[in-house]
Length: 330
Image (cartoon, rainbow, N blue to C red):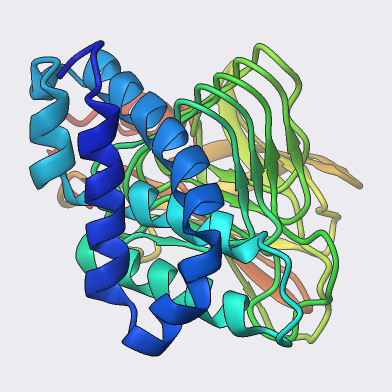
């Protein structure tokens, strides 16, 4: 199929999906609007199909293969139908919204991807291996975007989120890697690349590449929504902890199994608000090499943060202990 789409065949395909998904009563409600529904949906699906065939090497450019057997494309196809139904004039107090949600749910059942019919998605959209992807109600996605599996374009909270704009807005030609989370009403500019497993909660300017350079596990025992930004790195034989820290916070080295690292102590050399610096010193020769990568726990009065494998920390401890080889774990 590649760059050529048999539009009559595609119209028939979409009509078949409507008939097999909806009840006779729902089809009767849609009957006066089928022409204005099928035509724009077919045009958008055709462009999505060509984009998928062009950008996904595994399909070998075979649009008919994607249409017939790619589950992730079913999610997009049903979204296009559901979105058109969602936007129909609805004097009957929600009947078309209910039909749109039925179509959207069918796409979810077939693909494992959930796209709310009210979301606004631009042209030539590719959802590749889309299982587990969630696109929220107020989300906006520009043209020529490419999203992989396990992506969440969602609200920042878990329950009781407010009405209004609470989901991200993506510009044109944005690529989002597997497992990434873009949360809240954040603006992602054009030509942005978000690498797998990133968590985005702030605006990203156009032309930016975002990747994970450190991972943070944050545990808090209060009810505040405020997040504590923390980071750590080793430089010039010193360990630096930066962010929302002060002299009262306790810092502990952990091995790959999250056990305290014995035989090594942290001696403070700088203790300031937003910056703690430490020199590492050995108390005794280790009986066995520590398991890598090393982690760092920071404890305050109302939170506990574990920084996973801060850059340079494992290498600095290896030089300090002069142990070789190290056992790699974690």
